[in-house]
Length: 229
Image 1 (cartoon, rainbow, N blue to C red):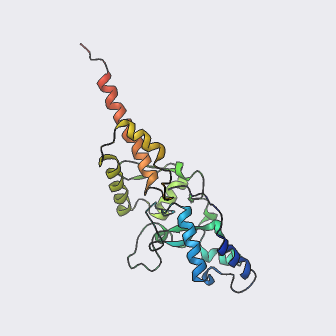
Image 2 (image 1 turned 45 degrees about the vertical axis):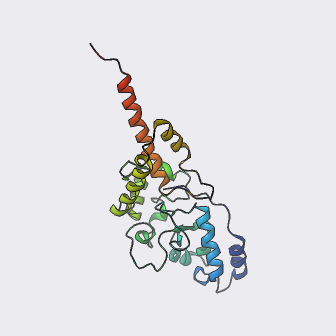
Image 3 (image 1 turned 135 degrees about the horizontal axis):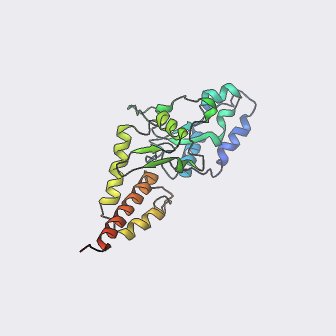
């Protein structure tokens, strides 16, 4: 999971929310198509074009606006709270896509227990340190909340794991990275490129790179070790 830092609500969406405050239109389902598109575009840009839960590549044709705390629960608690920008992220897949994806936002659906205390949100600045990935794309939780989050989002789903594995193998072994190249990649793989995009599955690649670098260093140490006569 990649940490998402909020950059600020788009002006057009803020203006609309202000205009409908206190009326029957103060409802996420009432957002006009133009303002909703602007909102989705802003969320995708804020996230560097990767899904908030899975780190898959997303764009306006493959993503939808996700409420971390479910929209239905927000509505029951307070009118208009489902419009809170701080509770919104962009996730794969697009609403209405024919295929069902048994992980991420579709798997989570309306789940919310104990006030979300056992759920790791991508808006949590420490979220990246709650999980580890290996070179095969397998995700491991480092605490109980992380384990629960993996279960809620099915981040260990076979097809999602295979997608991570394929990207990791192509990145590391497709060009047979040297030790220096691997070290540089660890430093910049989670940075946005010139187009503002993050590398797909960047956190998983970074963890795999660290393992790969350790592997190369172990080989070097064995070669340099003095031989016993």
